[in-house]
Length: 470
Ligand code: HEC
Image 1 (cartoon, rainbow, N blue to C red):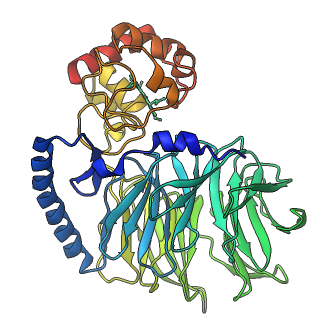
Image 2: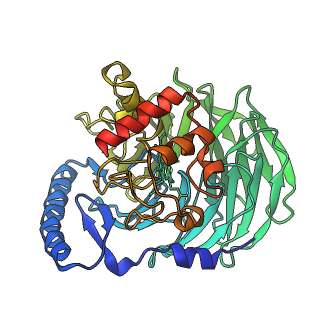
């Protein structure tokens, strides 16, 4: 594998010139005096936002604000003090879990982040749509290793109990094994007949769950499959193994949620509800409670002593619960979904909590209320691009003042080498060409995803909208 240290060094933003603005959003700028005055003012706003967060915290609810895209992965450190989030905005957030405040952003992934895990107090691993996983130094925010070799999206990551190995589950039907210290690739677990959705270490083995409907166990040393533990009629989306309790829990595409005895494969409990798919499973630190998140925005919490339902609530107004994690005390759940923030819920609270709300996401607005150009933008661009300098983190640079702008010059945005080196100046003609033939052909090597807008009228309407609104 290549560590890409050089590339990372170049791409790394200068941390001394970073300033936080508004509720955890981070913007970078030059050290101009005027900006320093502005940043002092913004620090006041920041403090006010923290107070508001502390207020909400009093009843146990809190949200982690600052991402500019849906939150697809969450984790909480073993001591419960810190949280990790992975987002569609390409970044990983490291948070103070108590104060619900961001500590630092880990930038480097070139597409959505799908999986995050703490390795130990100092390091974490993430994986995502750019088909890589990254091992991060949480103190400096630098990538220690870029784990390359997958030919499909990385859907899940797991860390061995001795913290020496990382496993990456991918849509390329393989699981990669990597050495944490050196970042070296140790080999592949191969044999699944479909994308691998989840992976877990337990009992000296690796467990994998895949779209082929099977759960398999593997020997990490030989990388050979031990056995097919289970054949479920539908794709298995999540797996959780607790060797101390001797059980394996899995969730599936059809909503199937079952607890299996690790030794005998006997069915211990069937928790299947009429919701699908199951997307997230999390066990509380004392193993006393199990949380299940589904595609319809519910979280169900089950008491593992008798498998009774402790609470069952809608956590997102719309869209799925992609990720769940328990806090250190086992009293709060952290969840990620289609909203730009991850939310903490006190488990068993009497009052209903605030729902994760994505109503004002522009791409969910009623298309009938928009011109064709705006519709094109909202549907095809807005999830990655702002039209103003709003400081919200998104996967792509702001398009504010795009006409006449030289490619690769939005301050503080980390471009691909291809765009950074390009001599293109954005105009009606160049933006038209970008989507007539597709970014991957217009600027080979760009990290903007392949997409074409084939209808010339749609392109003209989009460009007219950009003219009026950027
Ligand atoms: C999934 C995310 C995503 C979507 C959707 C997307 N872009 Fe991008 N876009 C990016 C990224 C990432 C870059 C930076 C590319 C690079 O550095 O290689 C970019 C770069 C650009 C640039 C060059 C900006 C500069 O500063 O040089 C333009 C122009 C642009 N996009 C326009 C659009 C338009 C218009 C749409 C909708 C039709 C769109 N993009 C859709 C992610 C996206």
